[in-house]
Image (cartoon, rainbow, N blue to C red; front, side):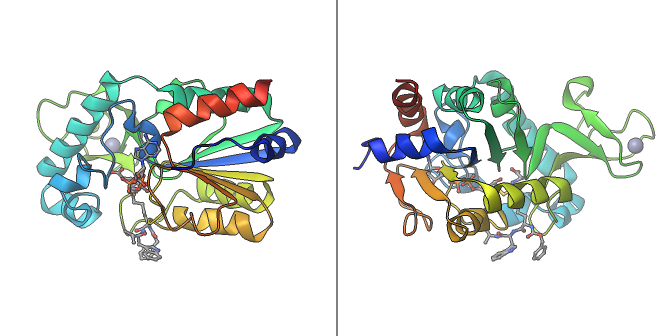
Length: 246
Ligand code: BV8
Ligand code: ZN
């Protein structure tokens, strides 16, 4: 189990002008947010096809909302963990640092990260299917089944990206640009199987970035990562900050 933080890794970070970090559900696991494919994974009880797609929503909006209410409640009760906090610290220490997240849990922002690209949306926002307005969750009452738009009465959906749906163009372009120009690309707590997010590490690798992965398990990125640390982001990232600050 390689968790050794090499001098080479710290040196690469010290010399880097721009660093990008792609995060997945794994970075929020230590906060108590279930991952998608882990043992307590969200998908264990529900299959993505069933829930995270528009057709499923139109077929049974109550069931999909019940699922997002369940996840939002967990997310509102947990705290960012040392992994999130370390990334917000790294943002202060490196000239250009961006977090590119697949997570919809808002925990990077709550940990103080400013430059966050949300590839798959945010569970604390909702979108009206009729007028398209974005409505913050805290203003809504979710106790009466499918929430309605306070402006036009239209049906609301979570402002997240479902399978088969395009990612927000601006976020996607920012992510591609970061992968194409960064000196170091970190891959943190993701199984790297969902596209186009999973294409970013390879784009960074091809343009010569130093690829650093942290994950207790091997992923498709492990093959080409320059450093792949088998461990938890909440334990390893604070150690990287410590070594970096020496
Ligand atoms: C699209 C938001 C255009 C909603 C999500 C190319 C090839 C094959 C398929 C496709 C392709 N292009 C498009 C597709 C289809 C599809 C796709 O990729 N399917 C996969 C399943 C093969 N992609 C799409 O549909 C995308 N849209 O492409 O539109 C288009 C349209 C039609 C047809 C073609 C193209 C939209 C994808 C976005 C879907 N929305 N989430 C919601 O959250 O409810 S995806 C969701 O699942 C997450 O956001 C994330 O992206 C993914 C889960 O992955 P992870 O976050 O990595 O979580 P996971 O549990 O899998 O892994 C956790 C990891 O952490 C593990 O490795 C574990 O070991 C590790 N870990 C655990 N604890 C820790 C840890 N690591 C560190 N520390 C710890 N403590
Ligand atoms: Zn509306």
